[in-house]
Image (cartoon, rainbow, N blue to C red; front, side, top):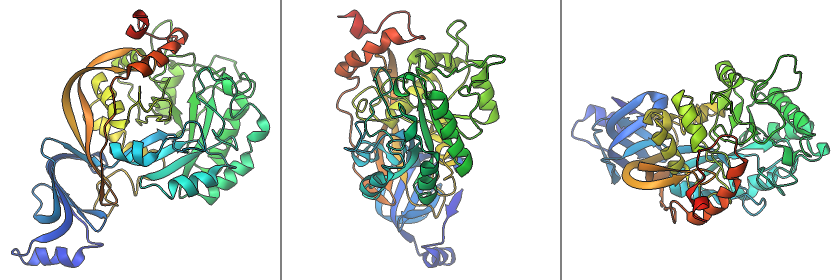
Length: 450
C-alpha cells in the first residue's frame, strides 16, 4: 500500500516513476513503525514521508530518501494527536496551561480549548494563545460571556460563571462564533449547582447553550457533574435532562465521573437508559478526565459494557497537569488498561475528534497532502500505579509514552512528567472521595495511611 501526494512534489514524484535509478528525496522519513491511521483504515508496518510541511506518502518500504530519517521500529506512528478537551487560556484564567509546553511536547499537535473564553473574552484567546502557539488551538465558546475568567473547578468551588443570567447572551455568543469559525468549533456550557446560583440557573444555561448550537449548526459540549439536571428522565417530567435532550453530534463530557449526575445507576451498577439511548441517537461521549471526573470504578463498570468514549480528552488544566491527568498519552494508557482496543484508542484521539468538531477534512489523518502532523508513540513495559481523580489506583503493566512529534513538518522536543504517580496531588484529590456516589469499597491508600 502506497499513498502519494502531488501538490508539492509532482515533478519529483513523476521523475521517480519514469526513472527507477532516481530516488525521491523528501525532507523527512519516519521508518519502520506500526502506522495506525483509522481515517484511512491503515494498520501496517511501514514508512511515512514528509516534504514541504505536508504528508508526501505513506506505505510499506517507501522508495524515498529523507534529508532526516527517523527510526520508528517498535513504535506506533499515528496522525498528530488531538486533545478534544483542554484549558489553555494561560494567565487570563485560573485554569489555563501553556499548550506548547504541556501538549505539543507530549505528542499533541491540536487541542480544543473547552470554553475558557466567552464572547467578551475570546479575542484575547485568539490573539495571545491561538495565534502565538505552535500547537494548533481551536476552541468551544462558552455560553457565559466572560467564560472561565474568574471560575475555578466546578467541584466544591462556590460561585461561578453562570451565577447571573445576564451573562448568558445568546446573540453575543452566536455573533462571535459566526465571525471566528476558523477557530471556534462549538459551544460550551457547564452544568453544576455550585456555578449556576445553586442550580437555579442550570436549566436556562443548558437551554441557551443548545440554542446557539442549533442556530450555528455546531456541537454543544455539556459538562454535567454535581448537577440539579437529571441524568435519567422520568415520565411526565418536563424539565430538560442531560443527556436526554442533547442533539445528535453534541458532546457529553466527563463521562466516567462518580459524583451525583454520574451515568451509572448507583442501585444497580448499570449504565442509565437515557445515556444508552442518547448514544444511539448520535450524542458523543468524551472522557474529560480532569481533576475530578475520572473514576476507575465507573470506568470499569462501563468497560464491562464496552461503553468506550468516542473522544478521549484530558480536560488538562492547571490543577491536574502534575496529576492525575499528566498528559494525553497517559490518559490513553488508562483506556488501554481498561481493555479498549488500541486501534479504537488511536481513533478517539485522531479521526473521531476531528469529525466531531467538523474538521475531518483537514485533521486527524495521514492522508497525502495534509499538513504533516505526526506523532510517534511507544507502548512501554512498566509496573506502577496510576491514579484516578480521587486517588484510587490501579496497577498498570504498560503505558503509552510519546517518543517524537512533528507539527506541520517541524519536529518538536518531547518532555516527560516529573513524577507518576504524584503523591502530593493524590493527597489533595483524595479529599473528594467521600462525595462520590460510585467508588471502590475501600478508601484510597493515601487516606488509609493518614
